[in-house]
Length: 517
View 1 (cartoon, helix red, strand yellow):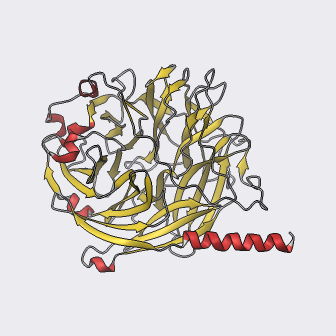
View 2 (cartoon, rainbow, N blue to C red; view 1 turned 90 degrees about the vertical axis):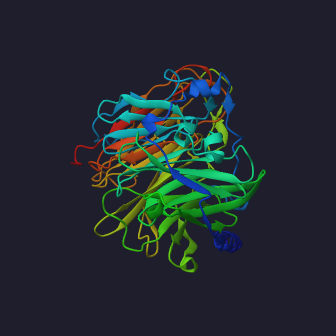
View 3 (cartoon, rainbow, N blue to C red; view 1 turned 90 degrees about the horizontal axis):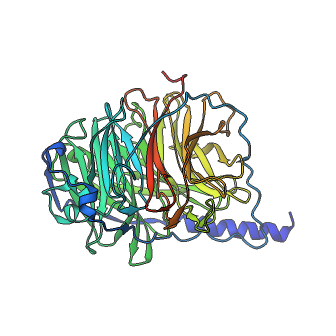
């Protein structure tokens, strides 16, 4: 490489280092503005999404984009993706997936788009939540035992923004250590202050009572994502004032108090000039080391950035948010924005490639800790799913393995990934092309497979037709791990049941590797 080009690379690297090393500032501690304990959810008068909508169509706010990555210097062309996986000869060693229908067209009237599909498995139930409705399913039979219910039913009698505004961006988690459900969505239609509503079940039964909380922000707390950790429920937000991006906010909510229905606090830090952070979410039965911080990750130019949030509820001045630490990745280009093709229509779909995809799944092993996560990247004229496994989190973090899954001419995006207790991975995502309607597929890897490689892709649900409007898709999906066996993966996302608008369905799938018992 010529000396001049080397100097340009060095200068560019120093600029990037400065950008990602901007300090985290703005520690803030606030109490909930209100809390109570509800009656059993199954006893609250049901309000169906159909009745609530009264035929109205609700489109989510225009997606608020994050600042683009710094451009590569003109002297440096985008290199070919060195971890691009263009074939998948290894057979997938998981048993065939089983599926049942989730919330969507066919069992309730669509009143919002996109669905923001996510869900989690408990001991006997699976809960799925889309933008305007949630439902409880029997894990064994797949039968819906409660719902679909309007999101505001969860806040019936609570008052405030939470009961008034069913604004979506929901997350449902199962706190495996406490055997409690954690359900949260924002309430932002009323303007300042903006609210985050959190409900924690008082029993392992998702249809029972909930301890309910409202926390508030002065600015718009967009795209909330949550992770369960021993000392708190951790969350990330992209903060906006109007359309002006302010940076990310990393928060932790006082888990011990939320589990008992007492007054609770949140502590937040600002990450200036950053967006798209995800908090770590524990999988498995082995807790992180005592006192371990929660990890937050986003991506930059050819790197992942990692922060550590340590909370001290007794002396809040001792809480810290340190980082980011830059973790070099194989080079990649963020995928085109509104470019996912569909059959027989000019309407394309958004890739939402400016951020990591939910979840940042954490697991502790006897000799190491690991995180797995994914995002959408350019993959040789199409888009594919870039995935990572990170290790050595408390030392110098490193990428243990990585790959860009794009084994043919299809476009793959909106992925989610997790790891079971023996080290197998499952990764689900959406697929589409000029020949294939938006559908659901998945892949994975056995712990014994060659590193950096996913196995042969499997079809889950084949979609029909094309979405004619809007161009939104997602905005996220969810792979979680069953708490009872720590082996079964549960994946939910959307697909199309036919051409038109507001015609999405969702599916819930179970995936398991025979070597995990």
